[in-house]
Length: 227
Image (cartoon, rainbow, N blue to C red; front, side, top):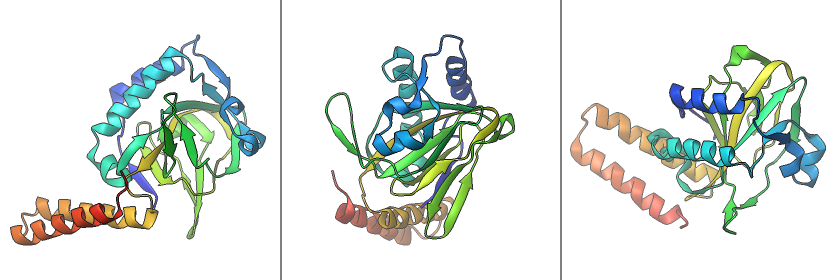
């Protein structure tokens, strides 16, 4: 299930984050520093030093935005999230085909199962050539290049890569969510059901029917969720 989240970050937040990332003293490091053995073979980008205080501040802003975005909550059903990171592509940089690691470990030692991968675009599409996020699923390959502030959610089990950036600079944030519902097909059904309920709410449809659908939603979530 690929889901576009429009305006996950508002314009002011994007402006603030970009200002920090584009500052002359921004602590960029070789992206391979945080890649696994196989990922390092195909990863060519820069990543904001995860130990730098500015990285934590910017990550907190991204996470705060996810907590305020009902569409994101509906799509991801987050249980816990791995700390957002920030990357930079320019001058032909790319990230070859790979599947994200299944488990990430927070500084606290808490493990996060990576059910959902999220990329938040921070550069406008016209500012760079290339840089599409290409995600493969059973229906083929999908290229994603979104306006700044928009995000794409997709199963972390998906093979994906970033097309080489041949002009300009591509800035983005990326992170992972351990969902309350591990199975992608079950999350998709719950997302579709939740959106149907919201559409019915907007039309003032029959109250009893809406209450019944809400009950079905929560009973399915009760059966499928892991806490």
